Length: 458
Image (cartoon, rainbow, N blue to C red; front, side, top):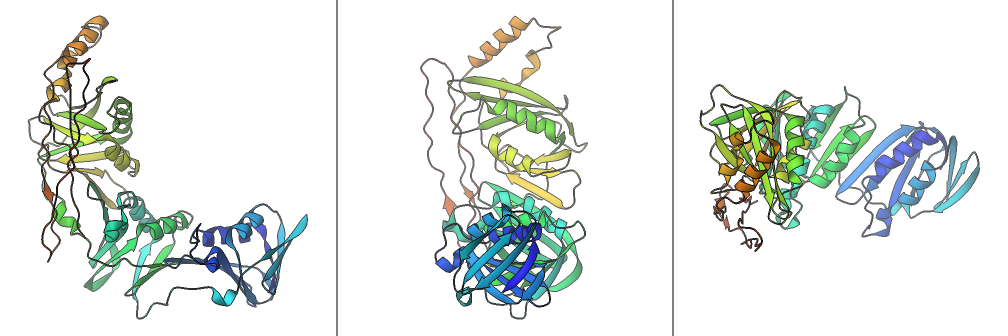
């Protein structure tokens, strides 16, 4: 094989294929990238870890066609650190790379031993705008489970009915759902789950695609192929039945609030510094008449913090205030993956799931997080006595905060067991672990709370 190519084109080609190469391959040949050159002036690079394969192409001046399996990291690092035009000459598994200031030689493997995923047989074809697929991945990947004991939950589940499609992920504590429409209709329902690791690499490729690009998806029994201009990503599918996501989402809500996303996110970050490190809980009191959400958190040995943001209740919302305890990290993670300026928070009772949705956006997006049940303590968040500085001297505000700290201790929270039922399976109840109550002899208040869990059985 002999060819000449611009450094920038070859570097981009190799970096894309390298996404599929494992840093610790189980077989030495899997640590290589397969280069393929044909007389038509096309050069391809293939990387694989047996579960994911990336095949990408570009153009070059090919003098002699051929193929070579070359060390992936060495080849990628070498090409990325040279400039100008590059010549590649491969003979007897050795590749000589010549550039404007020198040359180097890499010893490769046997190209005929390089593995590939089996080709799709009678695949189902689905066409989806690349930017919509990218938005779906951005809105779901962060909720996939990292615990491989529940393997099917480590993927993103796709479900298609007629011309409607959805992508969903959950780890039992939080849930993400993205929905949209297709140009074509499918008479039979389609359901499949793709590993989140494979889709994470696909997401990197999609972020570099043109706004008008269309992703052609070929779905077979065990594999799926995402085809983009000049790049194909092939992945194995996960086996097993995914939980019925839609049955976990409430159909109606008593409360609905609209907030400015960045303001809410900033307030959460400010109070998070004074939250318990193990149980980063924020208590939010939604005041409908005052159109204000007040955030309160405390750490036994550090202190506490109060913050507030303006919000706009829905005209159909319940007229009573509602207090909800949430895990700060879970809420911040959901807000991080919403790109719109405003969000809508929907909820029912303090012990029911909380839904966060963007206002607008490319697709319909939903984020569900389970609350923390707190029996008492919201009376501390009632900051009506914390007047403005023009009405109350600053030293008075401090004394009021100290008085609040000496209030009746918060009672231990009661964790309710939750059940998620998968069709045709016997429901299983997951009992949360017991969390030891924090103690501090130097203070008169103590608190213990546990996140309420939503178990998802595959």
